[in-house]
Length: 386
Image 1 (cartoon, rainbow, N blue to C red):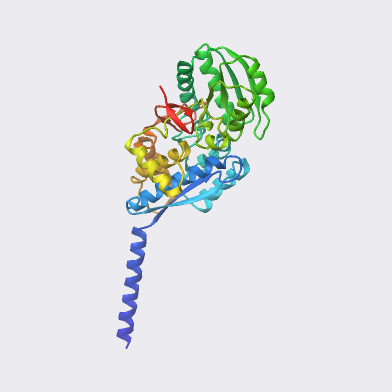
Image 2 (tube, one colour; image 1 turned 90 degrees about the vertical axis):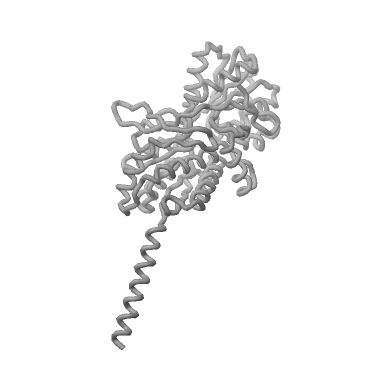
């Protein structure tokens, strides 16, 4: 009887050990996603979450990372500075994610990325394009191409194709992203020796732009250079057309979304935008992404979904070289060391990192090195133009 009992106990122990070994062999890698799912930037945040979910499902279906499945820990940072800091702390110290993707806006990144840097946890922006983000530290990465890299090419192509001789500038003066966009637009226009007829400003949450647009119309500008998020940018285009201001708009990263066709209600034609991604770019990788995204979510993707999708695939290449030991600090450091060498061709084209300029001798992070594509809106599509 005693022998039978011991035999049963040993068998039970062996089964438990085998189960534990299997669980360890097929574990999970927790990856944080801080996105604005509610609030003024939700139209970007929802697409970003979808892009990550699609990529995670593909990676996991293909066997995961060395047999480990990716588990996305998604948190709504509401595009509020206080909330994004709390979200980062929770993801790093409570959820113990290996890295964080996000946040959605550059304003939020300026507030939250120092938290990740101090905790030696990789933070990877997929939609932050303002200057100075990666100067925060050497754990800060992004695959969103900076406005400084994109805007000069957008202006050059718009000028070439629309015969623009003078422009008006219109920008949001209370946001890191739109202010950075203005600074880069201003420099690009100066480099081109392009006359500026007037410079007007607005603030987040404004709904009536007709006073500024009337001044722009009276100035005789051939185009409006606009640094705005789409929440203000779409109604700006609508109201411009309402007062008979039918000139082209040259927009930054915040205007490059298919949402413009819904929000601008037929007033979205002749908007020039630049990005490494375009829905009209018919590469095999982009065609596959668009098809998969549309099948999963029932609507077309945008730049922000594409950049999120590619970002997780980029991180997955680095994670393959990270030994999962259970020591989260060591795993985070190993990921930080593996990421800079990743090269990937995805929905947004060929990608690699480049070291950002350091700030006052501090180690800097890594920016995206990609070639922008310039498109112009016609009807309800973005048409690539050179």
